[in-house]
Image 1 (cartoon, rainbow, N blue to C red):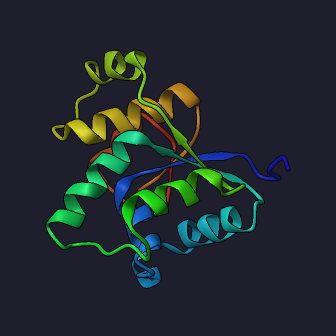
Image 2 (cartoon, rainbow, N blue to C red; image 1 turned 180 degrees about the vertical axis):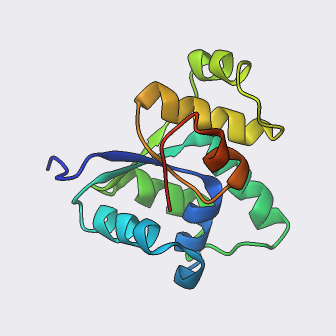
Length: 136
């Protein structure tokens, strides 16, 4: 099934909030996008680097997933409204040009730029930069 409303890229914190069912932490538009993706009405790209950052949050016990990490990733990858996007060398090349201190942010923004897709984030450094369209 082809999505109705386009493609978005997720930053780590919105995906973590959604996975941990902390919906009140999400902006209204962000929550709606995740709900629409769950229904297969649009696509949310999950960069592999986001999964890497999530594992750190899991180890620090700042996040809980409803399933074991590997099962949860398989379910995300199989869902009609989500896809896991590999990190490409071009993303790493793009990150070298980006001003963000956090290397995860640079790779996530690099992926959003490559896909020409808005980034779901409330990260002020990213939103204030204007380097990629953001939604929250």
